[in-house]
Image 1: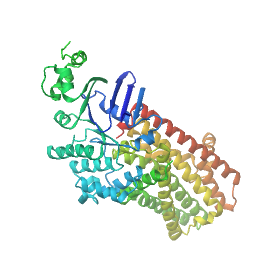
Image 2 (image 1 turned 45 degrees about the vertical axis):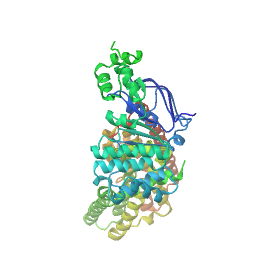
Image 3 (image 1 turned 120 degrees about the vertical axis):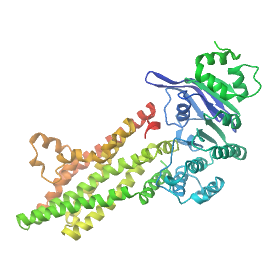
Amino acid sequence: MRHAILVDGLTKRFGAAVVVHNVSFAVEPGEIVGLLGPNGAGKTTTIQMLLGIIKPTAGRIEILGLDLARERSRVLQQVNFSSAYVSLPPRLTVAENLRVYAHLYQVPDVRQRIAELLEYFDVAHLRDRTIATLSSGQMARVNLCKALLNRPRILLLDEPTASLDPDAADRARTIFKDIRERHGITILYTSHNMAEVEEVCDRVIFIHEGTVLAEGSPLEVTRQVLGSGVEEAQLEEVFIKVAREGAAAAAGARDGAGRIA
Amino acid sequence: MSARRIYAIMLRYTLGMRHDLPRLMDIFYWPLIDLFVWGFLTVYLNQLRGPGYLALSWLIGGIIFWTLLYRSSQDVAVQLLDDIWARNFLNLFASPLRLSEFVVALLVVAALKVLLTFLVLAALAYAFYAFNVLDLGPSLLPFVGVLLVFGWAMGLVVSALMVRFGSRMQIFAWGAAFFIQPISAVFYPVDSLPPALQVVARANPVTYVFEGMRAVLLDGSFPVDQLLLALALTGLSLALSIWLFAVYFDQARERGMLARLD
């Protein structure tokens, strides 16, 4: 089966600093995969390389069987993106913003698609409000409308719930699972909320200092880092251990026994 | 290139104007202030020197054409800056949008806004000061073309600097055109400059427009050879500015700057 995302030997250097080092992974169609790691681990740089925003120093990215470097525009037609740190033009209304992006992604039925999404995310009443007047929760939902406009086959979400209160974040998680079930969308997801990742993701890829430290289901990754005797996923513990012990935890993960070198 | 993606970017920049008072002031208010200040100054100068339609024409024509140039430059750069400020730049370039489509849309919208400003200024100059831009005859079109396109080129150079070195370069978005104003013969003939600066001024295509405008108003002559030189220099400037923008955009992707612009 063709991978939804295939990353092979991806490396990014900024001057002397190696931010992403020889990272390889694959995401299968319909999977929700969490890309995890402490601040500065290289998650956002990896996502931005997948979006063609940052040019890799080395390595290859294949999305839906297409080489991103060669067929950027064709690839991105089938991908979309949402981030807590990226916004929409504040002086345009919700409907105007979605109209702009619908044309940018060459959506065939602009009005109908916008109406569907506004309804689905329960923001139809905000359609004529400017983005500048929305709360962060409302803005996050509008960002998700934008991210689904082109019926993407792959959705890249960079900390999509970072600015949401627990209720809004819970609704967002339900939506992510729902769109995967209804449309079979592949989702690559970064978050610092480990409980959220355990709830939403089928599989996680743990990155530390630009390299893949552990990969598998949340329980498998927990066992790789904390030890094989662990009974349930504890990504929060994994995260803290990796953030504090860094390479030592990595060594434990690599030998699969969870031992600290 | 996709016409629909170009349309999307044009839509983004034109819809934004409706809710944006500062941008509307850029298009109408400040150019009108310039026109009135210079217009009334020239009326006063004519009163001092006796009736002199010629002096009035030079200055009014100068300010209308100068506005066309600096608005063209400013519009290209400020539109891009708007997306940097809005933290929307990443959304745009994480879409299938191609750089060439973005540039075309940026230039077309800037041209539409500038032509709108030009028409309003020309109408008011006629109403208040009896200055008719149509007196420039067939030279009007190439004059406007050179100023518009050279403004694009300057705007793209500023945009390239902002993309490559960050929004600290934004000061040039408003001021770039003023760097070349002293050597553009806007309000005085190029011969009034010191000899060394005259050489520099003659490498500037804009100089030929203002010199040409004065020649047409003075004796109706139309310096075709100089206009052709201006057109050639302008074409070269635009080609170089597009090249610079593409190179700096690529370097920004290489250095991760696109994601960090704010």
